[in-house]
Image 1 (spheres, helix red, strand yellow):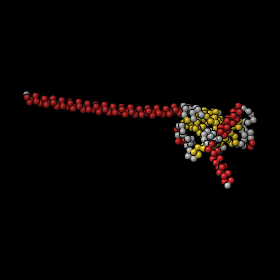
Image 2: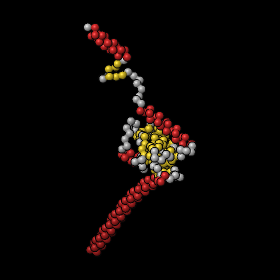
Image 3: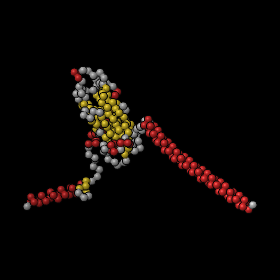
Image 4: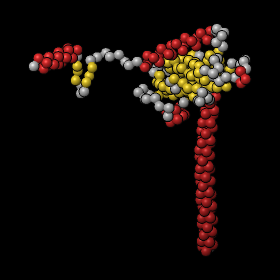
Length: 260
């Protein structure tokens, strides 16, 4: 009887050990499966976030490209450059540029006909609220066989670009190449010829702007007015009294030499 009890207890211990092994294995497998699922979900969420961010950037770029560019300059005229139609001569047009932004702005002209056109000035920097009238020169070719040109529009175009700059920066055309991503195309202007034998508001306005542009150009050529005493050498100030005294002493020396 005692032998039978020992065998029964031994069998029960084996069954309990086997059950404990199964339970431990099942727990370990469940933990591994749960950990794998969590890692898969984490990686999946991270991949989803990356894809979403890329899509957002793409949509933002497309939205920015569809929006009209923010203008920094106000142009007058807005869309055209008017030239008197005088075949065989070099004619002029004028356009006013005004900086309407709150920062300094560099501007630059480009044309599809650089051999027959040039601008004065070709570029520059405008302070906030500052304006300038630029003059555009163009050689007007004669029509073939001296035919009368009915359509007074030209294929020549001008492009005006702007760039935000900091105060104190000197104008260089290379600025537009170095900061190409920040350049804004303000306008693309068409060339339109005006019949000089037919008076029109556009022709009268062009004459006024050309006169104003020429006056401003002549004013820039003049030296700045002398508002202070002249400085010679290392800070030596010469005033009128000293100049008169030196001349007086020089004359006295000459007279003394002549008298001897």
